[in-house]
Image 1 (tube, rainbow, N blue to C red):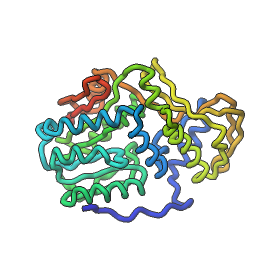
Image 2 (image 1 turned 120 degrees about the horizontal axis):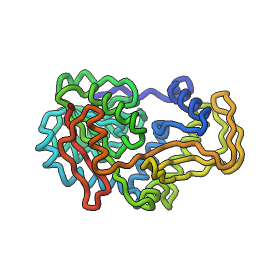
Image 3 (image 1 turned 180 degrees about the horizontal axis):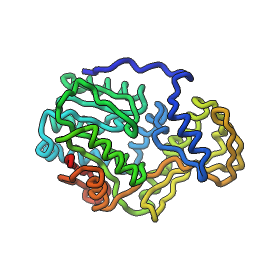
Length: 320
């Protein structure tokens, strides 16, 4: 059962002021950078779902296989009757495997893309008609309030996809602390983390042959033009994915292919040919790195599962 209010219709008057602030601030920096959360308007969310099905993009299918294979382990470690709170739920495609395994009392998906969230929540509610589905539209990097309907149910945070890797390590620890505070004493967290591996395999996962990741990256330009009265020339930017070995991360950039002069929300910006907007980082973790970060964020690792190749890990942690 889906318990929600209808999503508001989009209009220029309802643009998130945080979007305007972050984009203007990021384009004013040297080098230019924008937070990855703003990829996820409806089109961006749909493109990301296409990315997860690409042959080069191993994280989704590897994590999904782990969720399918270890349901009994999750049930034994987590127990029944928890409220599952998913951060950055997106389409919630992986979530049914977890819900079937642990028999939760409620499901709370949180996502910044409201219309996409409501559509996916309705689909999941149809698949689990006895389960209260309580979507929350919001940015999990900011203040959040959980629905009062979950009361004092014990909580299980679910943070799949190695989304934690999109953050700088200090910000990732801050987020883990905020999750610990939001979920409360006695809570648990099941989190996915991508592992360090061969450079070529990593780059291919973020620069696929079909160009879907490029379209996902370039959609940010289209969103800025549409929602912030921008005039960025979409045909003058190229998608770039590079491995930064010193920081153990893949970086996505939008590179100007010629000198550019453009406007966003009434402000003027200039880019030289070859200059980039750094749109996303995806940090990768060694086998011990994830545990150290969880402990710094107030969580004590309990159990961990990984695939035979060691590509990806799922870690279950308890509130410390």
